[in-house]
Amino acid sequence: MSQLEGKIAVITGGSSGIGLATAQTFIEQGAARVYITGRRKAELDAAIASLGDRVVAVVGDVTSQKDLDDLFARIKTEVGHIDIVFANAGFAKPSPLGSLNDEHIDELFNTNVKGVIWTTQKALPLMRAGGSIILSASIVASKGFAGWSIYSATKAAIRSFARTWAMDLKERNIRVNAVSPGVINTPGHGVSGASKEQVEGFFGFAASITPMGRTGLDGEVAKVVAFLASDDNSFMTGSEIFVDGGIAQI
Image 1 (cartoon, rainbow, N blue to C red):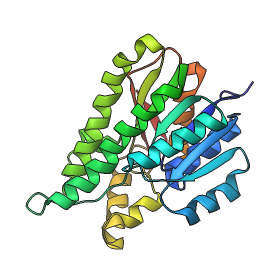
Image 2 (cartoon, rainbow, N blue to C red; image 1 turned 45 degrees about the vertical axis):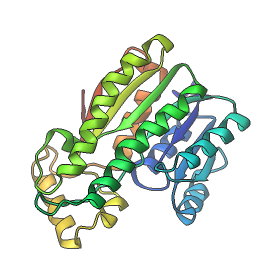
Image 3 (cartoon, rainbow, N blue to C red; image 1 turned 120 degrees about the vertical axis):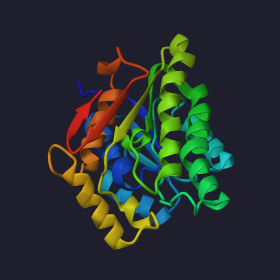
């Protein structure tokens, strides 16, 4: 039997990058239905074309509680429950201390922190015992890269959520874990606000400090998320797995 045979999964931010790769991995490992969300219909349509009929695309923004309510109402009607939530939607945008403003802070916290809170909380009524919630954190939560203070703070919050929510949900036998990727070459870097030269320089720096001498791949992160979502991971909750350049460690 495949690791995720018959599972119902939700992946926010599933139209590209790590989310899309994870949806593909879930399908390969036997998931019965995977709901992916994203803000842009064209990207979701392209994702569906590549993933097949066991994936359902729902246009929505995790900063909108109404969009999330509509998503989970649809899931309740169509399949009745959820086994896996991968709260993946988020984005990175640099700004150094001295240039911070309310707009920068609010947009990062609204998506990367509040979006994860509302996604997880609104999924809970449909979560079955033995289910798995995986949160998308980052190595920047424990690093000190210049210019990334607010983004790093949002990911530090996610690490904390994994530990505390695991305790909140232990009586329901629902696991909560975080995956903390290193630098992964995904389309999200193209909309970070950094120049092409800055992005390429950052990739080069990240590769230089990674044991394998390269940045990570979205498919490598997807395999770790699939492990955390599987019944093989029934012994672990509240943990954080780092994925950097093909290396995974707890």
